[in-house]
Length: 113
Length: 111
View 1 (cartoon, rainbow over the protein chains, first blue to last red):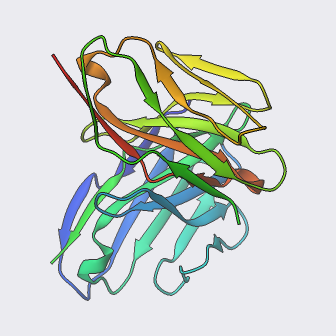
View 2: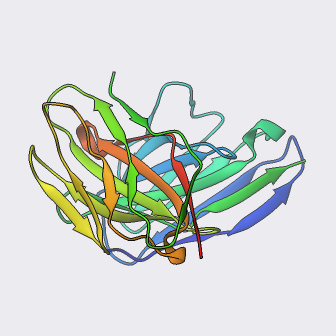
């Protein structure tokens, strides 16, 4: 398995501001992913973050809105920029270990007012 | 594109009842299939997986069999407990390890 921590665990932010979410893994991993879980919904992949290259974004997500950093093999950040109430969600990072098993962090619960 | 269709919830059962949560998928190739569980207020935990046709994944009394002919991966448990109350997600592994999730099924087990 993998030990993954996220900061902050939750936050309440005002519209128009930005929030940076941190994801820390207990050992080096090649691929990290960021997902969004809107209230009562399933998970949607935002982007794949690889160390040493730009993140790859899924359809409907853009770098200006969700910039991602991946400075090393154990850490990544996701910024939610210029927030609106529609950005209220749980944001989760994940990593791949072992035989393609994906492990998730505890999530960051964001509320935008 | 790839997709996962999951049984609509919520599902409410009495303790010791039999559980089935249906999951079917559409995918090119032969994806790996997973069940994840999300307990209240927590993140997702991998429950079980299967990587090829006819594989059976099992964990904590839960089982699911990868059925290529019916493109299904139904989750079953013979006797549920109150502690099994959670949201269950079926998922498939697309290329580059990106997961596509079903909509999730809320399970409530009553004592």
